[in-house]
Length: 223
Ligand code: SAH
Ligand code: DHB
Ligand code: MG
Image (cartoon, rainbow, N blue to C red; front, side, top):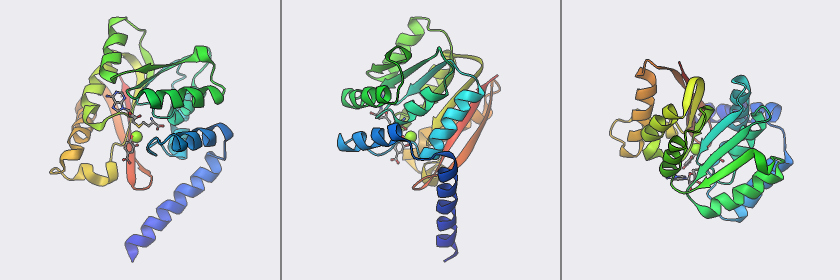
């Protein structure tokens, strides 16, 4: 069938890109292995999306990065690797066990203890704390926690960034479920995408990505 051929081609293309740009990496592989062994869900970004995250951090020459949704630290390692030193990664995680696995994974990847912090708790509370403490604006924010809260995370991200900052969001396409206006599970993602598309303070795009299913990343520049 034509559709199966297209699917295979997309997978082959992703494998080609991955082989060229995301070669085997001990710390990243160990992070995935330990996350799996600890029973964490296997919902980290793909290797090539990880490379894209690092590249975007490098493009904006970020020194301060905020991640919402740490899991086992796989995306966090990519983000941290892109940060210009001396720099800092702040990453927010609800689940204490995920945070513990992530802390070990990130440290093993050679990120100094002084260069990152995992804030454990509901991201909304951590975000409120960061605003209350008048944290300096982040150069880049990566949103990847519970999907229902994306519109709210966008509002917090706008409070915690400045002109020139980037806001990224994973899972912007969600297997195409954003295309179906009746799919309640994708409602917040659609709302997020519509907001970034229409807000005149922002310049944005959603870039489709090949994963197990088609997904995407939202890339937003704060004007
Ligand atoms: N960015 C990770 C994947 C994150 S998966 C990577 O690519 O490697 C989503 C994570 O968000 C999970 O670990 C989940 O526990 C966390 N999460 C879900 N709801 C949250 C909330 N309200 N506050 C903070 N973290 C949350
Ligand atoms: C899934 C994938 C993700 O990247 C995520 O952040 C949450 C869930 C998933 O495939 O279910
Ligand atoms: Mg994700």
